[in-house]
Length: 339
Length: 273
Image (cartoon, rainbow over all chains, first blue to last red; front, side):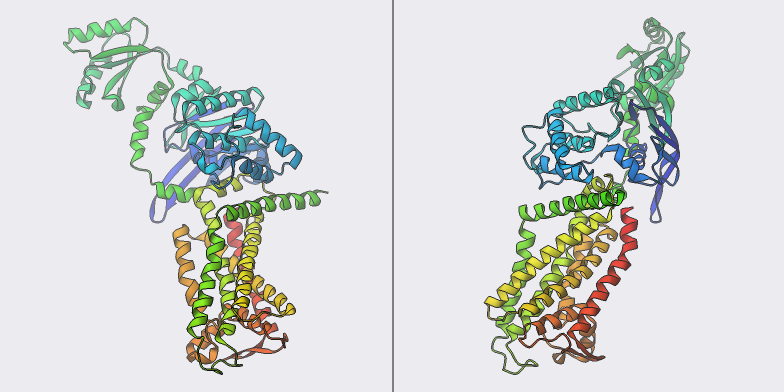
């Protein structure tokens, strides 16, 4: 359904330091699948989706949707696609129904089908109570639902959503998850970006993990976690440790039988994430630390998560990666890029 | 058949885009009201300021209020058209334009076309309100053929200024900059025209400037169209470079708006594709 090949995109230059948003990124999304793109802020998710939706041209690379070249035939691709952007752009002065009607005209729906489709979507997204109120009075969840409805008006074969659940209330998130599942069951290809692990883990049939503008892992959530193998043990010797102490303990733990690898998790007070072979290693680790007179504040064992996949590939957790870019991003420059 | 469907799709999308702009105007009418109030205040205050000016001061006689009417009518249309880029700029800034760009519009020129239709109708409504207000203030009424000339001249001026304003909306970084350009260009262009005073009152350098100011080419045929004895070929502007009649002024305005639309098209195409 979607084939992105060797996409590169660099922003800035001139006055600003150039930022490489996409770095030779390639990705294939099979038809009829709910496909997740997971990555921290600044990893290139939005740039990738904006290129896919024909809003942005890459510096190099190709984009094909259902066999159509999106760079040379963007209009044909737009016909197939619904797009729900990260920052919901809504006309506050219109009612929800008027906004949908406006959008339907941009998709050239005939007037008899238009009203029928709008009613259908009002029911599907449970918007009946407030659809005739002006959009300016809507909550974040209502706005996201109306935006999703706008993206679905023309019954697209492909729906692209950029971080659709950021800042959403639980009810709206549940409605959104349910609708996305239903769409996938009806054969619609759904591409969803998120930096919430749980969301991608629960929803996605397959996923790609983005880091610094490249795909660092790709597969089904189960495959990716299984590929890591073993179990995860999270160890804290005190509530907040420091790098020096954790580095010393890492060396100590690597000597422990059954411990395959140890990664220091900076975002959780320099705790230690151990990749272990079997379920009973916890006790071995506990005894090993006791022999060395090292106290244990907490020690928990779990199956590997998608965060472990990310940690394994990049040496940092998603939260670390978010913190690392938080101060580096320039909201003014980013707004300009999206204008 | 595909051509018919292309035309109907362009019609559907342009109608939707125009309807949205008018719904905004109806529900937030301050733009409409302010666009009428400001020139009305000019008309009343400026008219009163020179109400007792000595008779025969103005070329061709007549009261200052009558002289001022045409200038304020043109100023109304000019100010309204200068604001044409603002809704587009806000759509760019709030990300609403992306909603339009991601839709399979048959032609993205619909976005420009809708803006031109909207601003032309809005400017004409505001200008007609001022024509009526000026009439009631005793500053005279245009003749019926004269009214057609007024509408034609105003439309040409609106097209030209709208093209400029839309080009600015797509090239400036934000609405603050756009408002600054509107603010800076609005009054100086009015003062450097024959809206408030005839060329004969001005020093040579200013009369040169006023004689090439597009507002002057709009004001003079409209001023003439208030006369009962109006002819398109009557001289209306005695400029330092030569005398012009109404028809020449209208041809200059038409050429200017055509030239501006052709000139800004590559920019609009680049921004919308």
